[in-house]
Image (cartoon, rainbow, N blue to C red; front, side):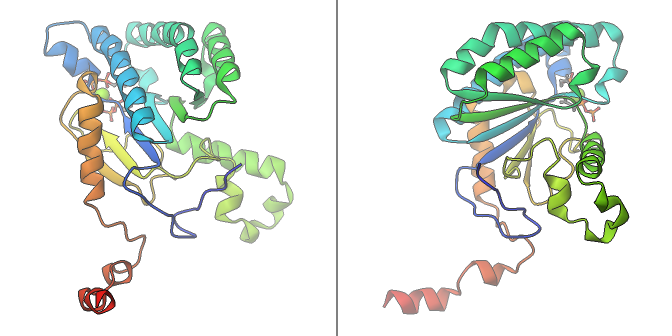
Length: 262
Ligand code: IPE
Ligand code: IPE
Ligand code: MG
């Protein structure tokens, strides 16, 4: 298994194509409302945007894609909307997982799935089992996920698996905790995208976003696809990722570059 660098312990290697993209897929309701359609129509069209985005990531060579589908706070929505969303998850998992498998995509659901009805839990288990050895794209769907929940469950599991740490809290390292987070085994996201115009994290990957580049767009999620992903990657390529260092440490002085070219 590849061991990825922690952005706070080491400086990760970067490239023009982000290795890991994380997206808050927001704006389905407003997309539908602006067309005088029910909110759920926006969620359905949001699934098409997911498929386009997955395809684009495969084509561009993005290796990890994490999509926020349902937050731990989304249970606060009207029960009819929550129930329709659960039906939609089940339908997509059953209908589209074969195609994902053929595309060599490894699907993982991150979040507290124990809260889901048995039918959805079964669909999740069989989709994960079918695709577990695939490696073209690691697709993480965050469902009943919250960044705070993730840190808390990691803390509990760290102490359960290593009880002596409870008596020696000063020995607890970042790595002890991070190996129990949902995305252990994935690099930290290079690029965070949020559609729908809001500029907030909404309890997404709180730990993992430490040095991620943020990109916000007013466009609604159902309109997302390869062109918008490329716009986000373009913006990402204009950032200087310093990871705490100075600009001079990253870019050699122009004079030196000229001298070495002579
Ligand atoms: C995101 O779209 C999808 C989920 C949270 C499930 P929204 O449903 O939040 O759409 P808006 O923000 O109300 O437009
Ligand atoms: C964030 O969107 C969660 C998902 C996209 C699944 P929300 O629509 O729930 O976020 P807030 O409530 O506007 O912050
Ligand atoms: Mg929203």
